[in-house]
Amino acid sequence: MPDSSNKGNGFDWSQMEKWMKQAGLTGPAEMLQQPEWIEKFVGQVLKKTLPANALSIAGMPGVPAPAKPRIFATHHFVIVQFKLGSRDHPDNYRLLVRPDRVKLQADTDERTQRAKLPCQIVPESCRALFKDGVLQVKLRKRRMSSQYYEAPIRT
Image (cartoon, rainbow, N blue to C red; front, side, top):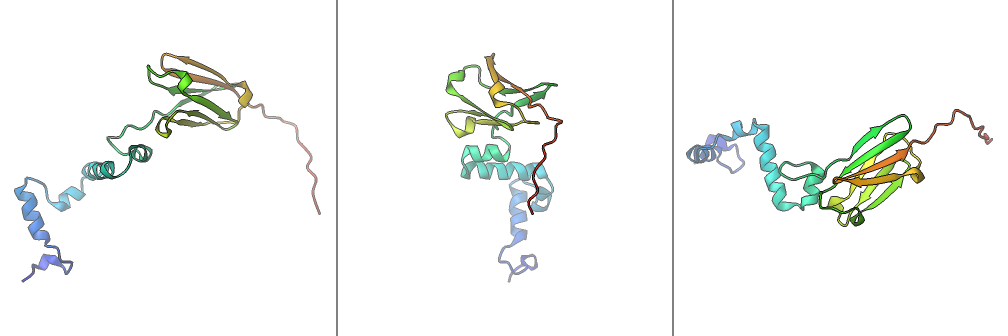
């Protein structure tokens, strides 16, 4: 005769609780109240099933995410710093700049880094310096024009 805790789903939760207590584990109700345990468990399951770059993008624990670039803004410039390995060489990367973003493209997608800029810049003003494992990119801000442009109105 089935247990009353079964509730018609075919699974005997009382047997599960007995087994967990014998194994020295806390009960399922207590485990679900521990978000760290759930996050760790889900991270382990995903780590076994998904590729590493998908997990680093999702920010799962135990998977190193690519270092985020540091962005500084001064009155006239925006400075972006990309942390590279001390053994990396800048010849292994391509630096791509557009008015609103900077992309440091590597040989693999996992190592490619992107930075969204806080304001519009002049891409042609880009100066990059590699020193002590850090690539520093200096970009001149685009000047805001206070002049109005009269646009025609169609009827």
